[in-house]
Structures are given as C-alpha cells and as structure tokens.
Image 1 (cartoon, rainbow, N blue to C red):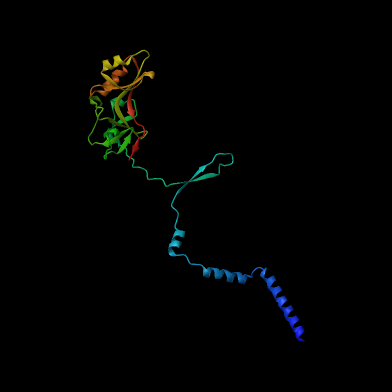
Image 2: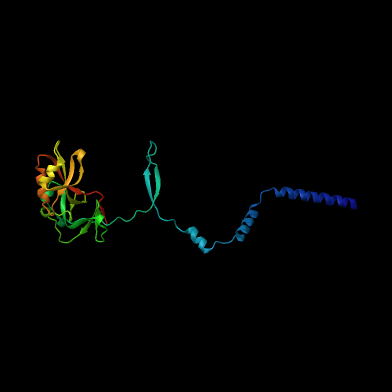
Length: 246
C-alpha cells in the first residue's frame, strides 16, 4: 500500500470511530452502567449522623383523632377527621354520701336535700384553699359537724343543698323571690314583714327580698309570704348554675 493510500485509510477509520462515539453518546446507559453509577453516587454521599437519624425517626406527638360525620345525601359513610389535642384528665368528682344528705321541711316539695358538713363562702371575698367546689359565685367548703338551721338562718353562712337526681349542688342564699299581683305596691310589704330588697324587676313585679334582721326564721318567712294575698308566687332562691367540682 502506498503512503497516500495509508493516509486515506487512517482518515476514514478515524471518521468512523468518531461517528460511532457520537451515536453511542445518545444511547441509554446499560443496566450494568446504571448500577455502577448509582453505587458511585452512594459512596460519594455523606452518611447521616446519629442525631439526624434520631430526628428523622422521632414519633409525632400523640393527638386524638375524632371522626365527625359530614352533612349531605351521599356523605353518611364519610367523615371529617379533626386533629384535637388529647383530652385533659377529668376533675375529681365530689358528691355527698346519702348519710350526709338530710331532709328539710322547707324543701319538702323539691328534689333538694341539705348537704350537711358543707358551707358556702362568696368568691368575691377572695380565694379559699380549702374549697372543694364552686357554684354560682360561691366556694363550697367542708365544715365537719355543721348543720345549718333554716329556723335560725344567717345569710352570712348559706345552706348548701344537693339534688341527687341531677347530681347538682346548690346554695340557698336566703333571698326569696316574690311576684306581686297587679296594683300591689312593694313598700307596704317591706314594712309589714321587715324586709329589704336584694334585687328587683319592677316591670315584671318580681322582687328578691330577705329579712332585714339576722339571724331569722327563713322557713317561717317563706311560709308567711306565701300566705299574703298581694303575692301571687313565692320561691326560695337556690343558685345552682355553673357547678364546677375540683
């Protein structure tokens, strides 16, 4: 082969090799090449520290999940999931034993019974460390041996009562709710029974009254007011809303 022919052969061979490399570049890598490349990437990555692993595997805070059915014709089987914080522990439940509950002639027509050994103090006088419960602005405080007498009653030491059917405590404040008949004035009644007004709704002819003298016979006062012709309705005030026990 002449030198000129040799040069031509080398140029052609080089062109074919370049062309082959060009087409090989656009081809997908083989499986073996892909595995080799992936291993190289893994080996070159920095491993996670123990702290990072711990953070990535730390469990989420516990939450209570509540299913609430949504409204609609086709959504009876569907539920709306709400993430709610865990319920707090229920407060300690206190209630009197049956031997601590006593009948009262003043309360004979009601479901209330006297809770012996328990008294009430207004929350407005300040907090009490010995309180076991609170109801309508009063602290309920145990006082062993106490039995409030409705015939020698003092508003400064209210009677605590309990409704077993409703598991509800109440406070007898000493106030009596009276409703006057049409045309009857309150002033003559205040003088006749030696009363004072605690609060009133004159447009409805409703007055909350109590004795101007302390102590007094609460049972007798309620009974006498109930017999007064100018009074259409008489009720003993018992506060029992927002009964919270702790």
